[in-house]
View 1 (cartoon, rainbow, N blue to C red):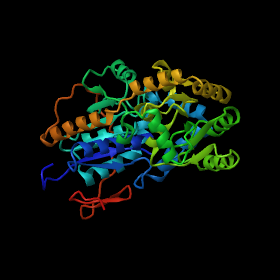
View 2: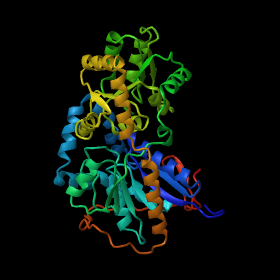
View 3: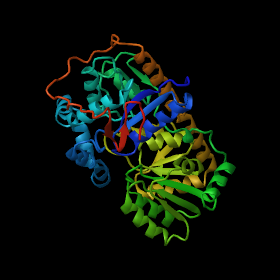
View 4: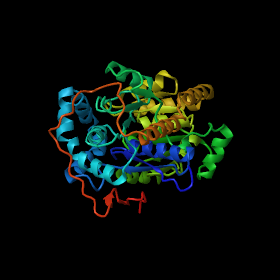
Length: 431
């Protein structure tokens, strides 16, 4: 970046329903900074659960975590129902319309060169902001589900769709999107997950640096929500599998953390319990086996760390294809019952060759360049957008927009607006 040249502003739209959307956006922001320090200034805005979102919308989207923990079957029913084109149109008109105002205000305050949607309910409001503007403001979707991609992700009205897998690319092709409107890159993960795979000696050294004894290590995770019946599965491992240590990452599930902490007091030092951790890459890199639900972020991060996976569950609908994918490429196995999970861990512990083959397959499945490749694409689109005053001819037209819902008027006071607990000023400074 040239000295004195202002940074190129980007608006990243996320939704804190789970942790994957924010993690993906943060990974891409990190990759942009690593590639060209100071050249780009991404701003993360949550129009669904942030402080600028409507209260009822924050409440409804906040039900995602409890629903996938308590009644995942109900979430699956809703996920499938809103795959219907008619219900999806209703959802966008009556539900995501509440996100139009926060997105419009964020765009007016930050004045980005590109809007990037990392959440399926954020793309359509971004498209409305683009279409109501006076200059070209490209909208790009980065899909953060892995294999089974809901139609809400595949909005043809955006300017480009970045997909994480061949399966997701196939769905876009089936929708009628031409090649070039979507691009397969992979699921972005942070740079700390993308270092070369650790050797056995390096894994044991890393375990000791984390306060562990260096024995065969099982890392159990349930994503940001700590879902997947982790207590029963952890108890089964401790009860029936000897000579293994267990670390559980509970995320924001405080009740699970409390229950497992009590269990740890009776486990003779074999169980370590954490909530959110800032060094998840270290735990994945030093694990002999990673156990958890088939979340896309967990799979992508574990694969980049070359960690063997034993998957125990999936969120109905959006994660259904993930476990099948992991088993098919040889990167892991699927053991939905606690007894079967314990048996699979015993098998892998006692069969180093099988575990090594699984580790190698996991490394082959990883896409460590995904965040950097997405950053390169965004940089090219942003540079192109800055040189245009009119939009280019799009390769794929989605038809006319429904104008029944208006975006809230944007009001700026002294060119300053409060969004997501940060103050955006006209000179691009965040205070």
